[in-house]
Image (tube, rainbow, N blue to C red; front, side, top):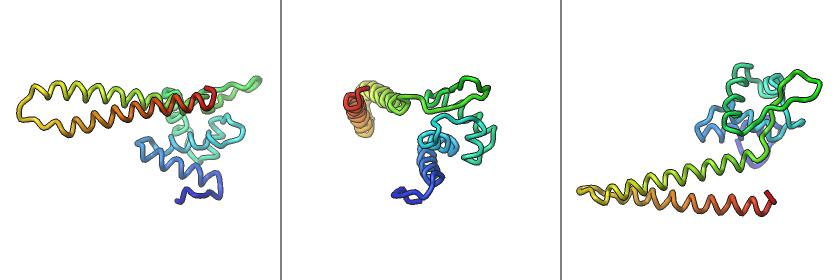
Length: 156
């Protein structure tokens, strides 16, 4: 599916969910996130998600639990209603990217310690590990700079 234009909300949700699936998440994970990015109102109930995405109640339950645990969505109560709603958590995209930054920093530290260890070993080629270390250091530095720039540019 071309990402250049969409004819419907379903087309957008489909393209978004397929890309999220490439990252190793279940397709429904991407469907729910994609829908919550564009739906009106911004909060959706179990039945809303089931109907708009044509997914089962069990799938909604399992995936919303995962998204809640990861801090990407939050539960919302509307006064006078018994229903629970879900919406994207404010700042969740930045939080997600900061977790990716933490991962890059952790991998940089692990590969750095690996290089330190390998410096004492004989018959070991550390070139690949050095490249991995350089990449994770670069990624961490650039990610941190980009996140801070985005926050500054958007008064966050």
